[in-house]
Amino acid sequence: MTLYKRKDSPYYWVKFSPIKGELKALMQSTGTANKRQAQQYHDKLQGERWEQDKLGVKPRRTWDEAAAKFLEETSHKRTHEWDKSMLRWFYPHLGGKDLVDINRALLDQVRAVRANGMAPATANRYMAVVRTILRRACIEWEWLDRVPKVGMMKDSGGRLRSLTREEFSRLMAELPEHLADMAQFSVATGLRQANVTRLEWKQISLARQHLWVAALDHKNGRPHSVPLNEAAMQVLLRREGHHQTHVFTYEGNPIGQVNTKAWRNALQRAGILDFRWHDLRHTFATWHREAGTPTHELQRLGGWKTQSMVERYAHVAPEGLQSAAGRLDAMFLNLQ
Image 1 (tube, rainbow, N blue to C red):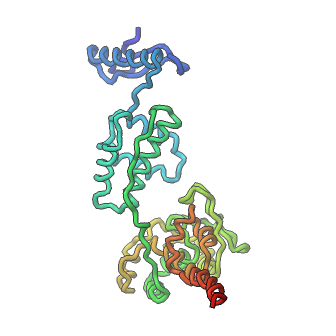
Image 2: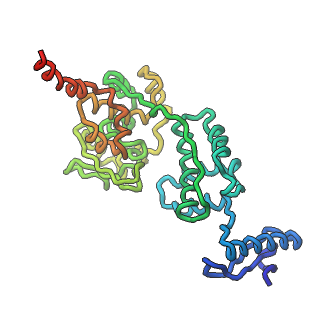
Image 3: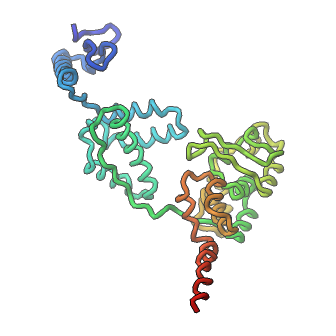
């Protein structure tokens, strides 16, 4: 019998012998206790399986199945919870739809809704998750014959806000000690907010003036080695002995949040507008370029994945190109 009731379920269930490509029988709930509806479900599934087995027709898969499989396969990712959050947003727009019905027109509509009131880069991160799932569905899982085009928003290259030395000095004077140490360390190393707040002593060698961020804890997915300059070492030596495991703490507890009232009030007292904690990383990169650090070195120091991400700061240090342009001067002199 392929349609039956189970003692542990109020619904009817179906059971089918394995077909080509399957190793065991298929058993699943119909999701209904109504026998007529269950029979309709059974007959539809039976027809689809016959087409799949005899005619080579691929089974129709839904967005929900693809999203669930993606989350299962990527549960180890550092961004797993963020991926889940993004996919929850997509559910009212893509939930229940067959993958073959998700096309460019639909994705453009969804992108327009998501981009409303949101920075282009953020909207693109949402759409990138959809693109990844559709590519896996086609290339790895063989659920689709082709991947629909996923359009992206035009991005001007991201926000670039940094502090001058004078602004930074004003801010440091207004910050409480624990936030001032974290701010100095952030500008000195270029580490992202999460890598600073979660920093543990086991990641640091004071003797070698070096710290290490594991691949799972680093945004670009690669391990990151950070040489510690004098400004960073000053902070670590001040923090040494305050806590057994974590570097940055407040009243004996590791710091989890930096966008606090104390941070915002310090910015206001220092007269600094339009500035976020992540902009300390931009300050790190800007100061390095102004000091003459070349692109390839800055990329490694800051742990950027691609050189193009570092080239956003090229305008800060035009003197390098000025020197290069001047190499032709001797040629023109020889023409005179």
